[in-house]
Image (cartoon, rainbow, N blue to C red; front, side, top):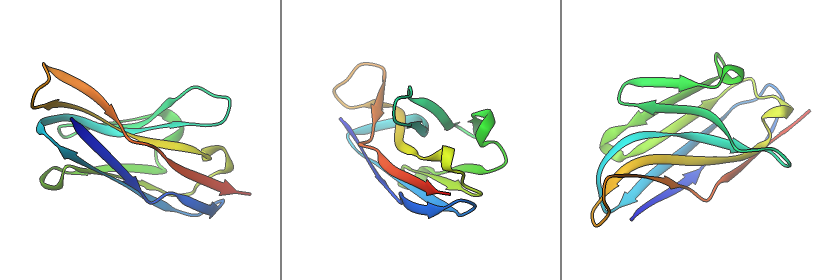
Length: 120
């Protein structure tokens, strides 16, 4: 299995910055994609950003404010969030699509989530 551990959430004022980190561990054979989703109260989970190989994909509302990066040697993905807005308040979930020993093919794995709260 693959385990994802997130860190870096918290409370920040509007206009501030936070950096989220997520480390993958376990019986990893290979990692295809790593990224972040978020879920605000009463809303569906939505894509924030994902990185696959060297390609990145962002939700439109995050472009220019958020930057995703990945350290392949550490199986870690980062999300630098700048100019945060109250509407960015949500639980942020780390995601990976990976191959693991003992499981067929690629599977999706999720972290427990980390709360990001942006005050106005």
